[in-house]
Image (tube, rainbow, N blue to C red; front, side, top):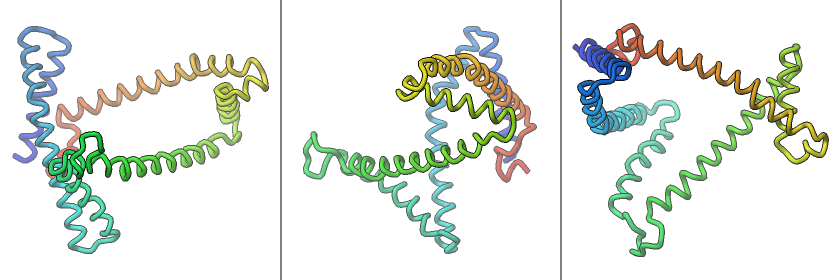
Length: 214
């Protein structure tokens, strides 16, 4: 039952949604509207299950003193502290409406700097990956290197000072070769999503069931 019931729910729901999309009718639209109205409720229960699962996993790591178990406290404390503070003190401690609340203060002084740090590190990783990818080891790598240099120089003022045609060539590369490759990639991603959805609907792919799918 742990495996059959979820598979049946996904199969029936997926087939109904496909029929509703390709065969629009007032009855199928009514079924779609009913599904949409239930979606926030299901999402709320999914959020509860997700928080419970996250709590159980990290509490288990803390009890076992697993490797890097201290970081589990860094997950659990903000997970519960932020909603509690948002409900207990929706305004500032002084009671002023113009002053930021504790939730806003913690978000702006903890979450935002952490996000800025992570994105800064990601920028360095991207630059490192680009440096390794732009090595002219073959003809295709050389073409990639030249195109990247032209596009980058075309986006900054120094490119216009070097040659007047840098911005125009860079814009042409972005509009035509880059857009063609981007559309091909998105088309492949779309077919991959479609294939994965069909495998899930018809029960071929069962990894999403977790242990019950084995």
